[in-house]
Amino acid sequence: MATLNIKNFPDALYERLQERAEREHRSLAEQVIHLLEESAGQPALHSILELRGLGKELWKDIDPVEHVRTERESWARRVPGLHPGSMEAAADFDAPLPDELWRGNE
Image 1 (tube, one colour):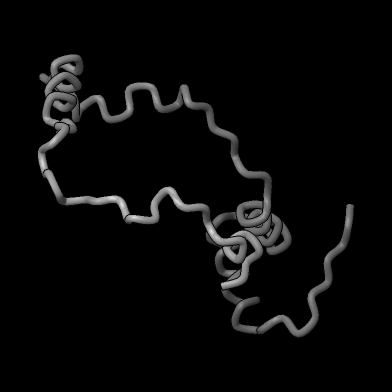
Image 2: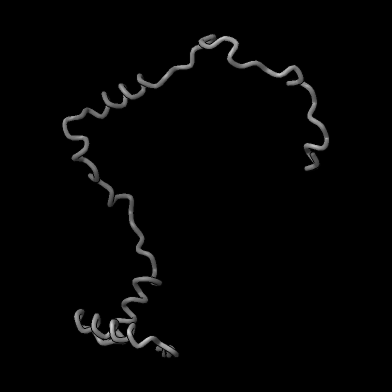
């Protein structure tokens, strides 16, 4: 196993680590390893299956099919001609773009 030496370790931090190690019934070395594993260890992998049932209390007494249908019906539908004249194409809309545009020159 590797050994880690830390120079110029602040006394106050060392004392706090010792106190915490005592509270958690660990040696100082075990406490430092524990804290380093928590902060730099392998991230815990989670499964999407752990989400099963999460938030079900929010859907109590609500029919999900009816809820989705109501939401979809509330979305604004596009209606051709609803706002005539609110948008117009520029006169040069179909004109070729200048070469400077493609070269990055303005």
